[in-house]
Amino acid sequence: MPDISELHLQNLLFDMDEDGVATVTLNRAAKRNALDARTIEELVALFSALPAAGARAVVLRAEGPHFCAGLDLVEHGRAERSPAEFMRLCLRWHEAFNKIEYGGIPVVAALKGAVVGGGLELASSVHIRVMDETTYFGLPEGQRGLFTGGGATIRVPRLIGQARMIDMMLTGRLYSGDEAVAVGLAQYRVQDSEAKALEIARRAAQNTPLSNFAICSGISHMQNMSGLDAAYAEATLAGIVNTQDAAKGRLDSFAQGTAVKIRPD
Ligand code: 1HE
Image 1 (cartoon, rainbow, N blue to C red):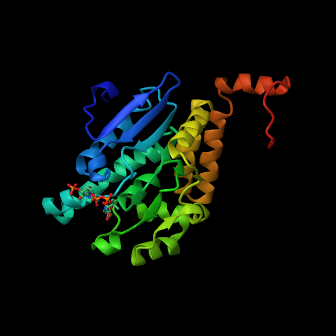
Image 2 (cartoon, helix red, strand yellow):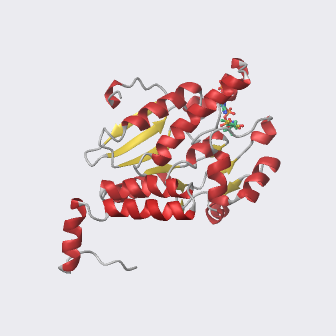
Image 3 (cartoon, protein in one colour):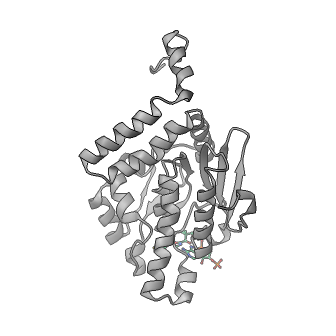
């Protein structure tokens, strides 16, 4: 697998600080960060390379006033893809978004403006969504004569339920403001989504990498299993995580009364 420094990124920007907090930026503002085939390949390559690069948490942000306008409709219209070609393209979208959801590294999205169509599919693959006052969510596929192809049918109902997703797709209903948080499209609504996303990523990066791996891949995998299998997988994962050397110091400091207490003050 190529090193991150060897990737030739054009539509994404990448940066990582000394604490392993990485920033991935959608960098096609002139096209409202619409997802063309190249951007999807860059997401696959970048998120595949992040674990070996030592990333402990990621902020996913965007240039310009909109997070992401979804599928590149112009590229799609011009390409005149066959059904098989578009199916293969969708499988690359799944590859990219699965790398994000199942990669084991916390990914926090800093949302703004349009988070629509494939943009919502991308946003729904991260672990924590932070929106600002300009953010709105939509699934305009129905209006465009299209259907979701980047995992929305799996991830969006998990967030907001099937009935709300169908309503969004049939009527073009948009969610914004408090309502978007209330229905589950975002967990935080703040003035500055980038500052908040960075704060959350920094905090998550302080957990042990193995705990974060379990949280940011195990929970998703277990949602795909039967209850019985999920319980088995949970016990197996806990067997590994809860006996890790990296946790010993934290347990000792609790026993000695020096660890932070878990209470709302
Ligand atoms: C684009 C795209 C795009 C903008 N593909 N080029 N997604 C949509 O249906 C949303 C389509 N976009 C919009 O409704 C608007 O662009 C926005 C509300 C997001 C922003 O509006 P605005 O006025 O700020 O920008 P604009 O003037 O509409 O667009 C600026 C440029 O970005 C313009 O290009 P230019 O060369 O004429 O300057 C637009 O063409 C370009 N642009 N959005 C391509 N989406 C796996 S299946 C997933 C299916 C879907 O995602 S369906 C949802 C598609």
